[in-house]
Image: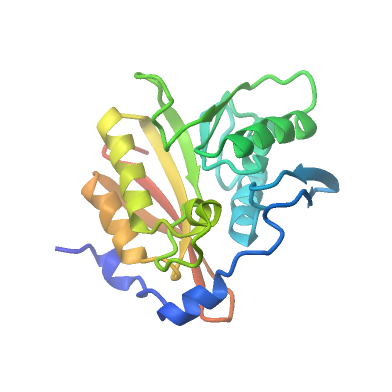
Length: 240
């Protein structure tokens, strides 16, 4: 039986609209520049520029809406690594930046050094990892953020685009299953996951619930083009 939250979520947009909205930029294979808080950051070939949804995560960490102070934070799919650096600025006890793409992990390390001033008090680890596979047994996080590649239609045959955009709900299913199966979320911990109705939101939340998570909607953003972006806060039994 589906939860009341799942019943309230919108279905995916029509396939042709999803594909049109998620066309990849032509400059992915080039060096680009991303500006964050007045600082220019190098974006190497194959590394994705943070989009509007990523900026929503960055800003909420910076504002303290996603509270990382004194906590163990993990950025899943770190990409350019801005959220990892911001978490350190906001007083995270430790920061793990995880991405399956080696160039993105290298970019995350460069961004971290560029944004976080010395002395860097947070313990920082950047790992090439398929979800949580590279973290050791016994490791736990208090806060995890994820902007998953959950778009429900294939928008490109470029593997870089697929891994970053349109794996679908199987990506989030595996994410939640690994957290639950390896007990990677500390007591009182929380996952903040962002996805829109270009994904199958009902399948995403159903996968989380099947893994023992309770989902709540923290924020909904209407882009006024048919796209609704949801920021979910997910906890497991015993979480605050």
